Image (cartoon, rainbow, N blue to C red; front, top):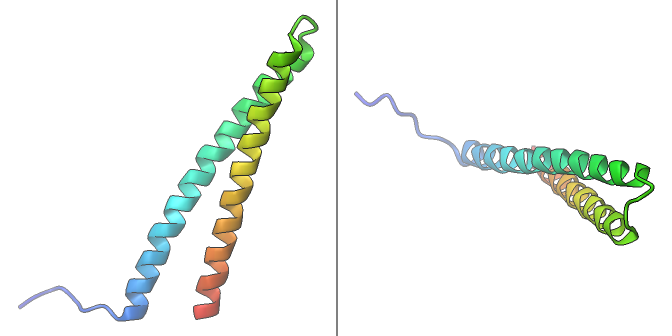
Length: 88
């Protein structure tokens, strides 16, 4: 006798949702950590009066990119949550 159960399409969709949500949340956490590191580097350079302006500009650009990536991922997570709630 087989112990496997057939899953309904809704359950398959839930599994797909969970996998995608886990992937996005993992990427968001990576982005969050990258933004913390970028902010720390920028702040350290900003406090260094001998830091060259181009280094400070580059650090600010890295911080801006990290924050933007994190925001894009948060928006994707929200859209996925809204989609799942609308299906519910």
